[in-house]
Image (cartoon, rainbow, N blue to C red; front, top):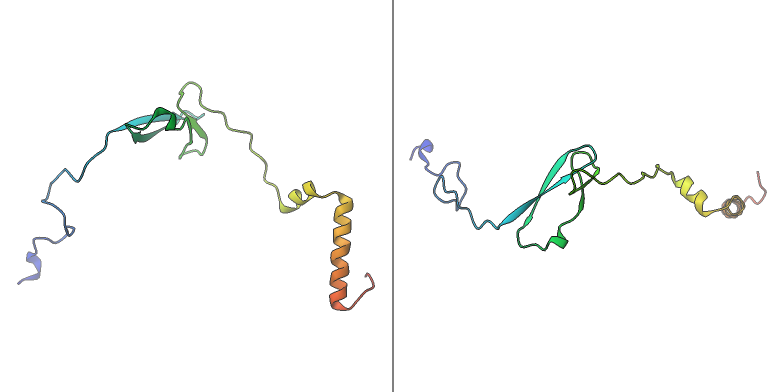
Length: 121
């Protein structure tokens, strides 16, 4: 049999006749539009039988990352962004200067004890 005469080349195993459009049951769905503060619209699809209280009022816009709401004229405002904090900034929120000095001194004493040097340098 010549290698170029296969009738099923390029089709999936179990695929129906070529051109078959019905590949299963399609559930009824509704389209819900969301808008962000820049006016970008995002459409999400939900099952038609889903209760309206289960459809979210706000989502994150995939294109901008901004919150997007269902009211085109009044999109949700961006919540105040917290500035990036370093580990040291978080530590300073939890500890006073005196507590930090005490902890540092205790850690240095333990280190000196392990090394066998008790005198501060």
